[in-house]
Image 1: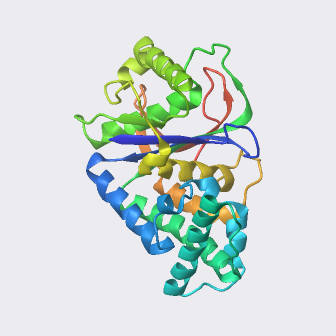
Image 2: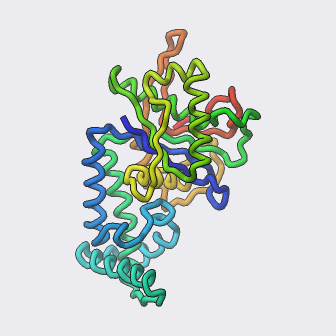
Image 3: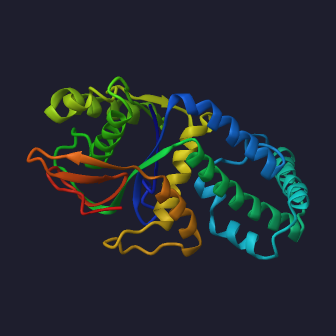
Length: 299
């Protein structure tokens, strides 16, 4: 079982929350999902986003002006929209090469906006088709943190717990692998050290290592389709998903996509020591990262 992870809002710029998100995919489904996503790119945009030098990221595909472009006209016929969208993207490539502005018509802007939204919807539908599960921890940006900065942050180990339960449910002989988007080597090394301390230095972590390989893998998101799926999920949750205790504003136009992401989220049952059961949700919210605190709300 592979868990591809990315983050949203960690720059504390405009994003309402910090989101740590993961998309879990069974290895037998991964290549089929990747091929389906690539085919969808060509069907929707008329070319791949890599060929168009467009970032396959939530903040690029779902920015507010994309929704404005999409809504400035009626839905264009599929074949016509693909032609207009391809020309829009090719002009962007020519601008990047020559540096000279390329004029675009209204239909080209409309086609690009409508293509972006259809692409994201279809990608989420593909995740459902290939049995992907979403895990995410949403955190208040000003949340208090543990005084021990060498410890793994609470949102990470809570997410790992949920993923571990999911791996255990899929089969006693299964192991989960964690794949992160590599930002810089120092950050990656620090994360590895904290994960090592958690998985080897705590009883909970040692128990969890029966289901999760404690050493993560790092990849470049621009080369790894599944990590970019996690990026889109994180962005959608950040701007479009809210639990009752979450008060930050959201973008209502993203809410339908957030509902689709919620439909992909993990839900399981954990047997407590006293024999009772507790429902586990793949999406949770934390307003306090101090060690010893509990999730304030679940999806």
